[in-house]
Amino acid sequence: MTMGDYLVKALAYDGQVRAYAARTTETVAEAQRRHQTWPTASAALGRALTAGVMMGAMLKGEETLTIKIDGGGPIGVILVDSNAKGEVRGYVTNPHVHFELNEHGKLDVARAVGKNGMLTVVKDLGLRDFFTGQVPLISGELGDDFTYYFASSEQIPSSVGVGVLVNPDHTIRAAGGFIIQLMPGTEESTIIRIEERLKQIPPVSRMIESGLGPEQMLEQLLGDGGVRVLETMPVSFVCRCSRERIADALISLGPEEIEDIIEKEGQAEASCHFCNETYHFDKAELEQLKQLAKKE
Ligand SMILES: [Zn+2]
Image (cartoon, rainbow, N blue to C red):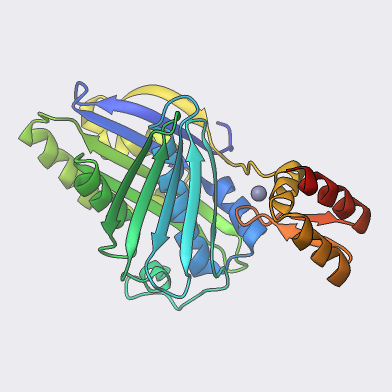
């Protein structure tokens, strides 16, 4: 068994049920290292990254997806970006958010996220074709919010489970999730069996911690439905930023603005929101960018 993160797409109950499951421990760990998130913020960002990478797997080709969660809580905005290739990136406005465990002994994600706000999903389907779906946050715990999103905005009855376990030293112990979706015409008996399973299974982060992979999680959830894995895909935290993209952003400020930076700072440092990578430009490089900006 490989220890890398991956997700599986599967069918069960003779195609009545479509399912996605992922282990995202390393992906969330990379996000935690890059953004230095505190445990409650790690759980919130990790849950959103996990849902995001599974939703990305529902896309095709070069399509991409952006999730924005703005619940008015102390964490600020959660932004997650994913694609059909298992690549995901994301950040929160305030990474240094942590609270005591809630009454269920879990990281209090709802308190960090807040529930006075919206969950927004924008799919870039190429050729300027966008799909936007938006729902109010109903719980702030995110799993239930994504469940509500699918039912309300995409009219697909679904169950979304996402979880993150954090070690005392703030590193990530386990992370993962699943999305179960009912196709039109799913038999009532199938729905009842799945609902019963959902009540019985341990939290998803505990299943990952105990060593279960995505396939075994789906067995736990849909075991008597004959799970048929259609595709397996590696998952990782990947950012599309580059020195060139940051330079382009500086050029777009215009020559006067760049001259202003040269005079006042003598250099520029710009960080990518998504991955926290810092790019440094010295005076000579800024002069070059200024010349390029003049030509635009
Ligand atoms: Zn980046």
